[in-house]
Image 1: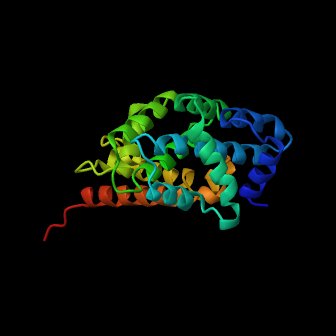
Image 2: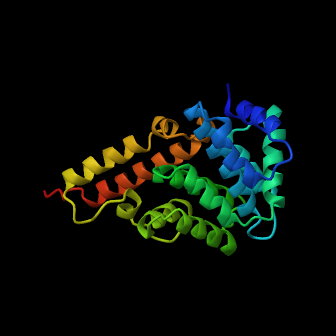
Image 3: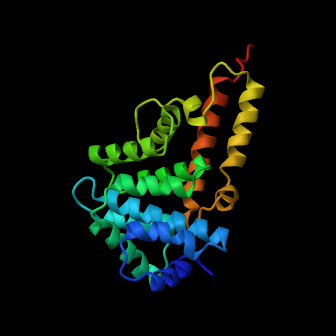
Length: 236
């Protein structure tokens, strides 16, 4: 059963409620099914944040809505439920920081899931080829609520925004002072930790896995840059 079917069933039980209430209601409705609870919680939370963030620059563009659908790979026959959640979030008077705090409470011991959420927000924000200043401020604020450290946020920023010469060591979360063997071991661990199966295991729905593939591509690209930099000089 897809996550969208589960969300559709959930919505029939909580008609008329604000989305801020829905995020918390997931805890009780799916209390006996931890995996589904995590996936539905994650999906509803990021839908709420995405809707709020998409309006951060004053307008929700078709590109941003299309980007949302691309991230979640939403089937056409399930779009009504997603649209309902999206519109509830846009109309809700609660501030986006309230949603961010709710997301953090849903995943109190898993900072990786919170980074997954930020990845999705970046993807939606840049969908119209412009990362508006207010959108960036929105994501930065959410990152603060998530208690993401500055280095981790810079790594996210470099992956999504062109800042000139990017630092592959920051991208990899490594130090230039490490020897090659340490770097290689760290790179391999990063690949394992960011495999799509790892995301699914920690509660990210399979429909969100394109973010993992994009992240892996950036990790591999950073490693290739480091390999070129550290390539031994061949003497004749």
